[in-house]
Amino acid sequence: MTSPWLVGLDVDGTIILQDETMSPGVPEAVARVRDAGHVVTIATGRSWPATERWVDELEITADYVVCSNGAVTMRRVDDGWERWSVETFDPSEVLALLTERLPEAHYMVELGDGMRLFTGEVGDWTLEGGRQVDLAELGALPVSRVVVVSPGHDEEDFHRIVAETGLNEVSYAIGWTAWLDIAPQGVDKGSALAKVHSELGIDGGRVLVVGDGRNDIGMFEWARELGGRAVAMGQAPDEVKDAAGSVTADVEEGGLADALDALLVHPGVAQVKAAE
Image 1 (cartoon, rainbow, N blue to C red):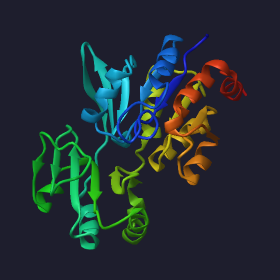
Image 2: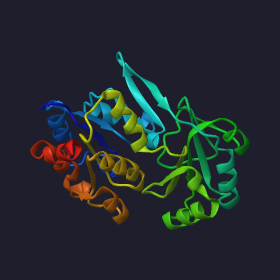
Image 3: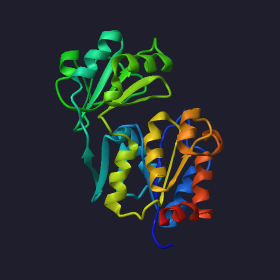
């Protein structure tokens, strides 16, 4: 092997099932790719405290891990980790627009240092060490993300509200359990992986990214523009599959393991594209 590939993996619906057990064959497939000399890392919407567990369990040895939908990238230092790249924005206008339309929703922001401020319980999110505040304080400081949870609204409602409020001015993703996750403009998993790719000096299109959600579209587009591979999980929405161009099996069927093993068996496709 002349040079390694950068492999970026989503967590929920890709590495793990909804009950937070591993997708079949994933630990073994990650180990095979890692031991072949490739750089395997995680690119997730989860914040670092909810990501580190999977770095450890998968024995990820990469020096960089992308969290918070690209707003935070962690770097390994000695025996620990530091916040290497953090993107923030002023959330006050976004919060004003959203609270006007969703006054009963619960809101959470993540500050640049990882601290979480919230107005009420936000299901499925770790709030340990965070602090409950009022809306005025919630929007007082720059943040790396705004999370909105409104149990009475579904994904279609969130899409409509995004259109009505003009939230295309910032980046956003809608979670598979119906929450809205808003990031700084132009920031997504792809923009963060691009920085890692450059920092590591990986050759051209030697990148593989795998995911299942709308928040993976940015990294799919980035990988394909480089001539690399983007693979959607079998259960992904059609628009996510279209953005990837390649589709593997569902997460329950070990689709990620199949995609990783395919890299070892057929590594030449993206190399050819990168060389053209």
